[in-house]
Length: 313
Image 1 (tube, rainbow, N blue to C red):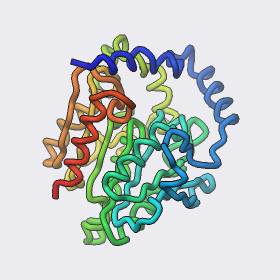
Image 2 (image 1 turned 135 degrees about the horizontal axis):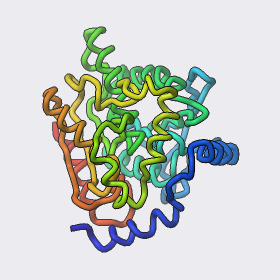
Image 3 (image 1 turned 90 degrees about the vertical axis):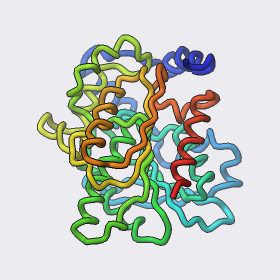
Image 4 (image 1 turned 120 degrees about the vertical axis):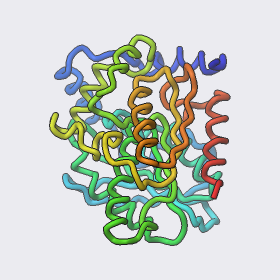
């Protein structure tokens, strides 16, 4: 049963973030594009990280995307030489920038496993599609995998789906090169958005009970990110529909009060068929991306489970 703190967040978070269904797609596109013009994306949003300047240093690397360069932030603990790299792909429906809560979670996880943290600030929809950042990110992560030490690839929501899509291509290219080590060692996925076709019929039935996500927005954002209906089912966009064999070990967290739950269950079923070593943690009645939400006991439990998974060799 969800905790009282979770119930409070389930009530408060959608209201604080003014979560609501869109009126129509053109109006939503105009709203998001106008919002994007007001954003300052010149630096990593670290205001939710206690004593950030004392604990971490940041180097901004430029990734050459198809539509121009975009930043990737490399955050390293001061006074340490980490031998692990955590690449964290942020969520936000592919249309929202990195959120301070995502930074706080990624750095907390990085500190716990002794890692530098890499957070790409990839170009957003609707102005951009997956094609503007996918290949450059594959190359960036592949170069990280060639460095000494382990690479953990993870993400939340849309970022979790993006991380899995990148892992599929990294696996394929490692196989061609005959070097299975040239890919991440583990995957950590929180409520990953892995089926942008919304092929699971149960999705619509969850719309009334998910206080945060909305079916209309989800379908609009999916098409923005894909760029065309023909690309919605591609594994680079909907990785749950791709070949899941031979992927690194993974852990997936999912609450059932979440529109993405049916897509995640599809992923789990297909992973079992493919023989992919995937640890699935499902929590009844919990919100979207509950493991990165603050102050709730469920997120603390998920953090312990994540650390146990990453430390299990």
